[in-house]
Length: 470
Image (cartoon, rainbow, N blue to C red; front, side):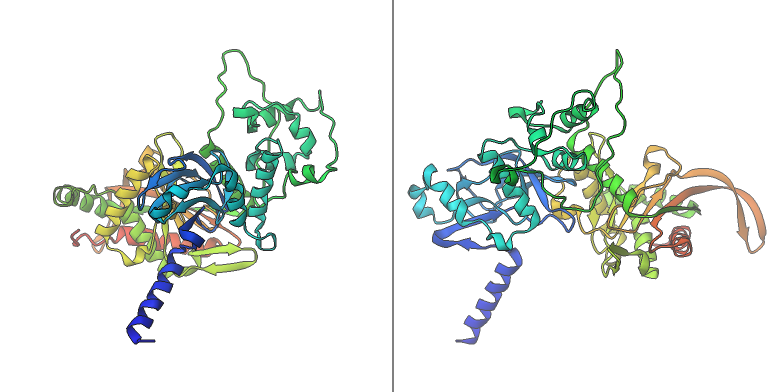
């Protein structure tokens, strides 16, 4: 084989492997639910943007999905015609499962598969049973239940039913307030509140069809949110059901508190010189680059340097194993317009300049507030920063963002009288002071390590080089 041809073949093989594009026979492309992060195993299809028969250009958005971290569009990696949609809106689909088929051979447009042939193609794209992951098996159980006349049960409803020992037969008898009699979390919680007064007799799973649609085992080790005691609703009260993102945030926070042994350490930093430098340069940067200069990129820059000094804070826990992260990827908590929270992640912070960080922080903050972040932009974090001071709080005790082991909160910068130490002696002056609070997992970050790390962050902020330009 000529050397040039061999090199081209190797490059093509690497490209295919990198993009994970796999073509089916006869010019058909299987669009799979993408991998959305190490802790995300499934996503909900919220809206199909393309119909069967639509012509699709490269990078055209095909559908919208939602996970416990972000809502996102899935673009097409190929050109062609959408010939099959294998799931409906509202379906929960495991990652790496085929969700649609695109005909890439434009000459075979007239040979679209009929509706009768669609199940056969879908059958061909299924993963063999011996290779199915637990999440894939759960997804197929849900689909089987729907095909057999059963109704759809979300992962949250199934988790509650399992924890509260509600059998499948009992679950089927609970009236649903959702679309097509769909059972919501509120329906289940209302049923549990009145269960003792009017119980529905449970029946054991007896038939294969019922067994296939039974409540599956948990796919994660996260504990369910305690239902709590029944709460009365009085005249004039307004009941607002938590939206999907708020429910998922609550699940994640309860899981973190149950997983990590939280301790919170506090320190105060004199950021007077930093404040003066920022006030001097913010107008210059905005006029030159069109970028706002906030304190966030400066905080992130200082954290990255401190993590390099104390690498055992830049770790994750996996059972009894400690994973020391090579890269420094810092997440920053962003409040969305609807009052929820999202954490975009800036990758390889220690390799970026302050100007580069400023542009990336501004971009992530702007898109995060309007839910326009991509799935890959909110995963892979090794440490998290949350800024309480943006909303007037002087401090707080943040909850660790699993599977990380620490999160730093920064409070409001306030003018305070403070002791100023100089070679000529001590004096009292007005200084810009800021509270730092570090919540860390005491299983791996004890008080000594956490205190030294937080002190180092404070030192980098206090000794900020005010001679530098941006």
